[in-house]
Image (cartoon, rainbow, N blue to C red; front, side, top):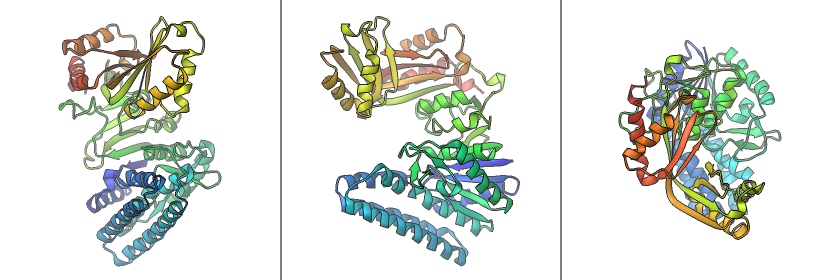
Length: 467
């Protein structure tokens, strides 16, 4: 098979893990054509983002110290795990070249004392650039032919929307296919850096947090891979968060749409946009553990087996969000009221996570991230209070709970079971939303009630028996 394997940051977080991953890729490459995609070492992207924040605040010493920590850690790992002295020397030369470029970039940003979206993407992309060097040389140390390629090297072309770029798929497919196929013919293992590509002018761009998943599926779509494996520290998508429900189960099979809903409702092991390149080509995806390869994980496919189409498959929760309720008689029957409210919030960079409106049109409720609450309320009060809206009420700490499963479509009584189950626990529901697709049912509770509501629903729909 032609397989694209994407490894998360924990898979390369230590010398032992890098060796383990390299051995796994080397072993699989004896039977399959393997293209691997890697995230930065765990925590490195966060540190690079922190550096950009420190530069913007003018804290040059702290930015330099954090950069030195990143450089020191990568050089230590590079020195540790390669046994062959010649290969180790080549690795250190490559690392020092890339690290010198990082230092030069940082020096320029510190001199200017400013961070642009373009320079931020360039800086943040170094996490993946450094991790792929370590893996490629670990493979060489095992006797395999391997080459480290950034997203730009492999041929991923994007728009110029720095920080949240999107691939230009027609151009990308041609370039990526040419690059990868020529390497596979030479029996060379491509080790690709995730998260980043380059625009048409050659500037480095990034896909946003979790974007290495997206890189893997873009590559898979371009080369018509047989499967994509997203490798992390979990066995697959689960019926709920095991930190809340101890006997949560790994789901054997879900559809693309169910997986996308799970990603949007907080399943951090898959990027919400990552499934887009796979859908048209119907390429299956597996979510599985790097450290428990015997477990087949969760299969994500266009048409799951009929026996896996249960009513509810997953109870998901997004914690610590804020609820805003806007009211006013002048909102009733006025075209464009909702558009005015949401465009006001968009102008200050606030993303709306969930919306509910009463049929009377006199109130609209919506959920935002807790960190955006002050900004959102301030924008609404400054621009609209006393005009379109008469009152703004907020609830500071709430949680969105979502039930996901394509088996809910057309089934009578699902909602009544949901609200009866949470009512038995004394949980008050403060907001409800369900799309016409009936693929998910979402509602909002106080954050303090989140765990008991999730447990009650997991029990009500007997999700421990799902497989």
